[in-house]
Image (tube, rainbow, N blue to C red; front, side, top):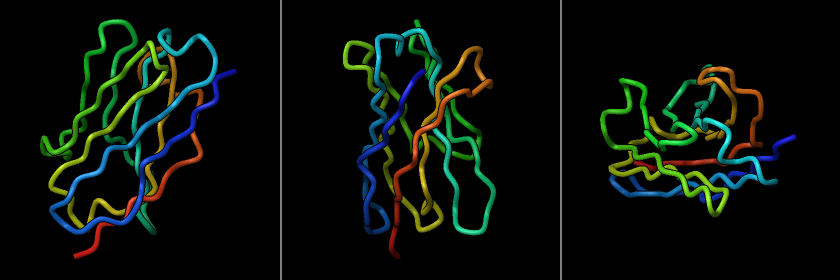
Length: 118
């Protein structure tokens, strides 16, 4: 069983930055691909991007426009989402997920709220 806990959300003005963290319990973090998702109010959850388990190669949804950067530190069992030039439409609950293979997200965190004011 993998437990994931997101942190780092909050209220930020448009144009600002936030870094989200996703901490994993246990010793198996490095064996999972990791992903970030978000859900805006009244909308379906959407994929933001992810990072592979061993090589740590990030990959992103096309719509993320290069403003987001995903990284991981396997020694700290933590994944990060650096978000720059934030826009009000980035507002939502951000979730992290873990799974193998990529796309089979078996474990989810509880989410962290990001609110971007205009």
